[in-house]
Length: 343
Image (cartoon, rainbow, N blue to C red; front, side, top):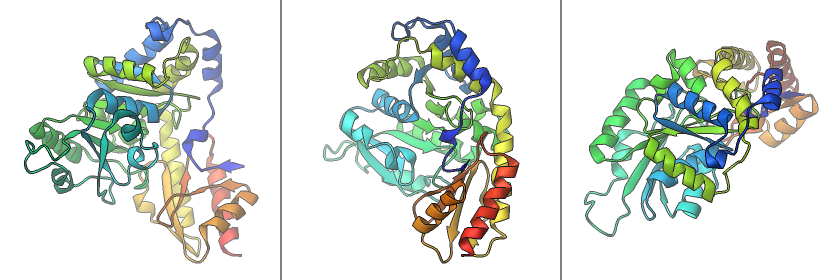
């Protein structure tokens, strides 16, 4: 089976599995697991932040970032196509008492500055209005097809936020993919955000976990929130050992995923009945449409032939490349799509 529903299906490497069995351990809730501490220090350094916290998932990491920075009754500005808004179970409202303020997302994954400005009340002293307390961006942007936010835009949002005295959180679930595609460092991509979340368990191939990095004071509050949410783990170095390999040895292989995604898109572009724009493929995500076939039938029939893909809203199909998808798998996947749409 060629698994292209998500890069979350990536399996850990043999080196990771070996490291997990021999990692030095301690109680992380007490801050005494040396492997977790090494992962946190490395992650903070990579993103250019003061501190970091290891969490079970990206959803929890984003929620901790929000709860550590947003008072109850305030607003979180998010994209209307963002993962935080669509796929994280309204955690900020349920757990933090915060309101989401969705802003229209453009095709490049950006929240236009005029849209951000409209989320702020004209009179911040008017007690009728909830006040924005955090701006959330996403890079790469999942629903926009894995596109990368350019540095000029990130800088403009930083300036906008500074003028209004609010912090910026970056949901960088695929942060290392963004840095590679932009031809820059992870630190450069993270520079314009106060807090940054990135996943260890997607293209970086760790089995579990995400990192939250930022100012030491904010990360300290996030640790308290992590405990509140049930995310305090004990001998978590078993997992952090794989995470250390993920951030230090796996980023360089992401170029293979990007090349395979482009190859898949270029192959699909030759299949009658499939609409795709290879020029929009910047990282490891491909979005495409079907001219004459319901997506439910397409997903079912491709799975029968050995290819798993998923519906992704707005009539689109998503395919994601990762370490478990080879160049040969990509070519076979194009063949399977061609067979199904030709029926």
